[in-house]
Structures are given as structure tokens and as C-alpha cells.
Amino acid sequence: MNQVKRTKSSSSTDTELEADVLVIGGGPAGTWAALEAVRNGATNVVLAEKGYCGSSGATAAAGTTVWYISPDEGKRETAMDSRYDMGGRLADYRWMERVLDRTWHGMNELADHGYPFPLDATGRSQRVSLQGPEYMRLMRKRVVQAGVKILDQSPALELLQADDGSVAGARGVHRQNGSQWRVRSKAVVIATGGCAFLSRALGCNVLTGDGLLMSAEVGAEMSGMEFSNAYAIAPESGSVTKTMFYNWASFTDEAGEVIPGAASKGGRSVIARELNRQKVYARLDKADEATRLAMRASQPNFFLPFDRQGIDPFTQRFSVTLRLEGTVRGTGGLRITSEDCATSVSGLYAAGDAATREPICGGFTGGGSHNAAWAISSGSWAGQGAARFALQRDTNQRSARGAGVAAISGAGRQTINPAALTRAVQDEVFPFDRNYFRHADVLAPSLGRLDDAWLGVRESAPAAVEQMLAAREAAAMLATARWMYASALARKESRGMHKRYDHLQLDPTQHHHIVSGGLDQVWARPLAYDTQGGPRSAQARAEQEGIAA
Figure 1 (cartoon, rainbow, N blue to C red):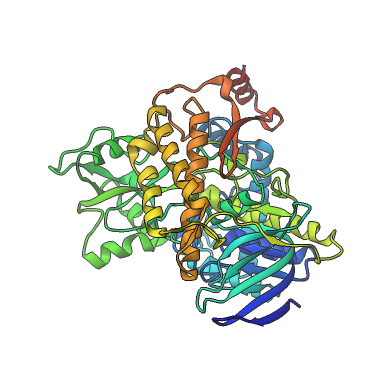
Figure 2 (tube, rainbow, N blue to C red):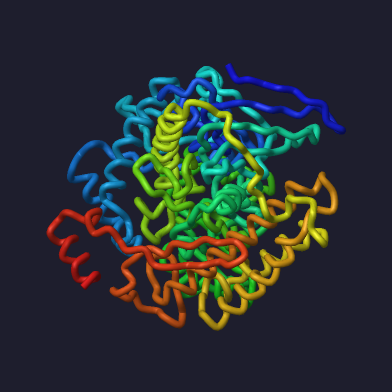
């Protein structure tokens, strides 16, 4: 049983809890982590979610394909080789194998627990995609049945840290009544998702990089943050980012003329350049009737806005834009140091989009199927690791102090305007000419402005307690943007989704990861690529050896 202590506060009733494992984030990664923590002996598990666990976040709002491949050596080898090449040869075959195996078992487990996978014409269950609402309803049900205590509408504000540097829990607020909560725990799993900078991408309104900031405040490192400039095609008036559907699209300008080279794959930069000049329109006219039916069946939420407006996207043009999805569909996140998804900080684990997806994606987008597989796998491993760590601790009675340093202390000399700070960050990361078409002459001044903004945030506090969450979100987006641009400047080449227009070629001497961190002084440095995790096929090995030579 979770131990709960109630104390009187000026606004309502505060909550104090003791736990073996605290999971921060209630999406797929967080719910898998909570389940596995219980399975591995943690008796008190608490899950704190910014929204409502089961309906909050990018997965719950949409559907997703899953990197689900049968245990056929040939099929899996082909899938891994493809991802390795697309990701600038930074992925790790050992991790890819582990993820494919864990995802296979995880999807089959979902079927055993009643997830309604569709059947093909022969009656065979098709387990290659998940509908977010059904998936997350089932995961919440399983978490509740496992005895996990869920704190809904309860965003974490800061981690607690013991004198020895280990993580000792977290503190946050209950959004609905303004009271506070504090959980002392032996281990913490960060499953807060990525950072989309409040770009209006579907389900990303709660994904502001909070977990990255909280983790950095206790000393954790990031990895792959240069691979965080993912832009997704979306209707100009909407938030649904299902870029895959635009594989069947024709793109035209305001006059109705086809835009040469514009495409979902390999032509998104053309769309970005055109959007700097004029509106761009799409029509999904390349999809045949069977494909149209399949699209509607697999992703019905994509079509709802069109149906409400009386638009047939297969026959009628509609204006589109590119929405930044940052680290949600990028690959950057907390650096993991072991197979149980531990970070560089004792007692702190990372899962899902909050963790780097470089082990399976390299420098290419982790969006869709790979992110879904990573959530199942990393969530499971982080929960297992956190439980084992917790069980090694005899007591939870360690000193525990709040580790937050930005926009939280209440002792600053100036106040923060969260809305103004958010706009300032967006002004640096949204423009295509800064974040998509990267060049040192643009990145360096932008990072300088972000650094200047941080100095103000570091010494500031929210104007009112009610603004603390918004202030911390704005500070987290600011910190995330600084790690992104510091890492982008450190990688002086083009690799994966990172394009430097002053260094357009891939440089074999930069076959390494970029690790970043820091708060007042942001840093980024190379970390050697572990060649033991490279490809095993003769052709792929030769290619790797050629690039690493």
C-alpha cells in the first residue's frame, strides 16, 4: 500500500507519498514502466501524469504503426539494415534486436489482454498498428489492476535529490485544486515524452521537455539533440500530423501549378522553401480506392476535420503547413547508459520519447512505428531497472531536496512572463531558415539569444504560484532549444535528419554521437560510436568500415 500523508495548505490539501518507484508520465512508455516495476517486485509504485493517464499525449490522441516484425532472421536483418543506413549509421544492432524482440512479445501481450487487433481476410490478427484511444484505455486499466497509484492532472515540477547525488523522488502540483504533491521514492522513471514547443501538433500540448529539464537539474546528460528538427506536414488549419498519408499527395502552389520536387519523402525541404514565399496546397489524389479505404480505416482521426468542413482530401485541394515536432519525432533525449535504460544519474531511468532513440533510429526520425516500439521496450526495461534499483535500497529515509533551479524558486529578482518566454523560444526554433536549413551563421546567433534568455530565467520566478507550471514549461522549452542548437553546431556535417547547409556532406570522421548538457553553461561534445553494435552482414559491415575509415 502507498503511504499517504495529508497536510493542510493555504489552498487545499497537499499530498505526501512514499514509493519504491515513481514514474513521471502516463503515456505508453510510462504505463509499461509502471507495469514492469510491479512485476519486478516494487510494492509501492506511483505514476504522476500531467494530464489524464489514458487520454493525454501524442499516442492517446491518434493511431500509430508499430515496428512489429516476426522472428524471421531475414526479415529482421533487412529491417535493421534499412534503419541503420537511414539513420546515418549511428543505430546499434544489439539494441534494434532487443527492441524487435520485446515489441513482438509486448504486442502479443496486448492481444492476450484484449486489445482488438483487426483481422485480415483469412482471420489472422494484424498486429502492426495501434489505435491510441483503445491502446491507452487498456494500458490504464492494466496499470490500475496492477495496484499502481495514479496521480492524474498532476504535473511534476522538479526532482528531489539526495545528498549523495541520487534521485529521491519528485514534487509537483495538482492542477485541478492547486495543491501540491511530494513523492519520496527510491527510483524514478522519466517518461514525460519529447518537446514539440507547443507547435499545435496533435497530442503535443503537454510535451514541453519538462522531463529533460528536471533531469538536467540533477546532472543528467542528453544525446542526439541535433536530430530534433522534425517537421511534419499538417493541414494549415489543423493539428493532425500524419505525414505518411502525404506519400499519395500532389502539391500545388496558389495558382494551382504543381510544385516540382515537393513530396512527403525527399521533398519536404521544397515545401518548406515554398512556404516561405506562398501557400502550399495538397490533394491526396494518388491514392487508389483500396488505399483510400485503408487510410480511413487505419487513421480515422485524420479525416475528421475534413469531414466537418465538407472537404474530400482525395479530390479537393487544402492548404498545408509544416509543424515542428522537435524531439517527439526527432531522436534526441536523455542519454541512457545501460540496457535497463539508466541515465548517468543514480536512481534515474528514462523511457519513451524522453530518452534518446539513437540506439534504434540513429540520426533519423523515430516517429511512428519505431517510437511506438521504443515506448514498449524502453518503458519495460526502465521499469525493471528502477524496481531492481529500489529493492537494493533498505530505506527511503534519505535527505531529499528540490533540485529545480529555473523558474521555480520564488526567490528571483525578476518575474517570468511564461507566454512571452514561450514566444521567444518559438521565434528561434519554428522558422525553417533557422532550424530546417541549418547554417552556423544562423545557429550561433540564435543560440546566443537563447543563452541570454536563460540568464533571465535562471534568476526569475513566476509572478504567481498559478503560473509556476507554465513558467517551468517555458523554461524547459528554452533549455531543450539550447541543447538542440549547441549539438547542431557541434556536428559540422550532414547526417540523418540533421542538415548543415554549410557542411552538406557526411563526414566519416564524425561517425560519433553528440552528448550535451549543462544549464547555465550549455556544452556539447563527441562520444565515440561503439562499433561492436554495428552491422553483421558482409555488405553492411563493409559499408560501415568504409564510412568509419
